[in-house]
Image (cartoon, rainbow, N blue to C red; front, side, top):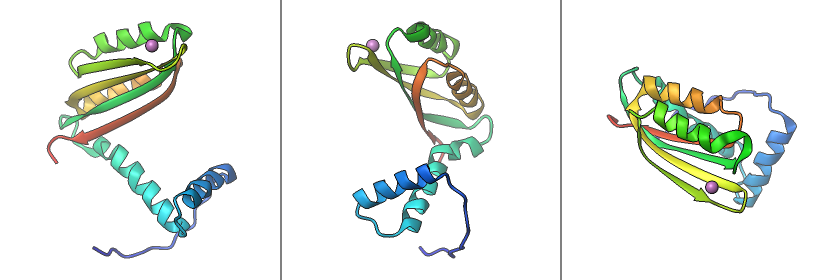
Length: 139
Ligand code: NI
């Protein structure tokens, strides 16, 4: 399927563009536009669930990386899972090194509740990396 191509100008921090170019070269892709198109598509597919109706059903995972014991992070993650009991179906904790941990939480719930969960997680300062991957169940 072909869709109309629109030319546009965007401003980017140099460091961000350098990193994108480094990745583009390592992937053997010549076109910078193609890499930017893929990056935008990936952003949209990561966030598209947010456009769903508040009560629409969404399922997916939350992956969290953190430093073991830092600012009571393990306790905060347990509190989180009790607070969002209605959403959380499963969670797995992996001890990566002596001080690094990863936790993956599987969730099912409404767009409204998942928005609450994501903003709660983003407010936890002890977390170093968090990625969500959600899909609408009714697609
Ligand atoms: Ni651990």
